[in-house]
Amino acid sequence: MKRKHKLYSRPKRPFDKARIDEEAIIIEKFGLKSKTEIWKADAKVKLIRKKAKNLITASQQEQQAFFARLKKIGFNVKSIADVLSLTKEDYLQRRLQSVVVAKKILPTMKAARQAITHRKIIVNKNVTDSPSYIVPVEFENKISLKQKTKKAIKLEKPAESEEAETAEESEE
Image 1 (cartoon, rainbow, N blue to C red):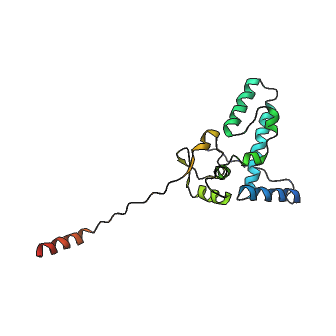
Image 2: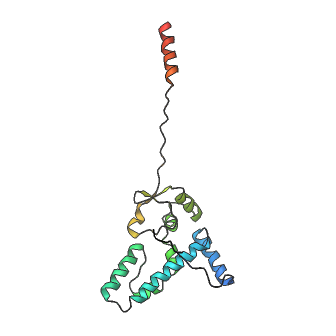
Image 3: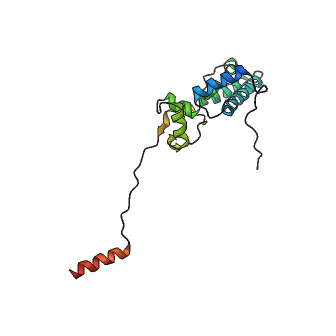
């Protein structure tokens, strides 16, 4: 079994006022649960940037394959400069929670998060319960609310009561 590694790194300066204020704004804007979600998004963007820096010397074909993967995720990139200019806000806008609000399926980020965790959102005919799911562009139009279905109520009488009724009917 593979060992799980941390998906983020904590800030080096834990009490930096400017960073704390910026994170509070991002949490409010994107309806995040904790700051670790911001740090995870930041780590993913750093990883994408690192791959782009390694591709500077690579062939044009490898670069185009990398850009195609990013376009599938939903980032509009045409050059390495575009990739290096990506921010954590760009990444956070591709989360299922943000896409549900952008598509006006639900009115607020908090409502979207609750509906997703309660398994009420369907993406490409599959229930997804992770608000941090990065929605590919091809599935963006396949997001919907789960339809409410009424459960059939069975009105069966116990066997004893049926026998009693048939006995009463035969007496009459």
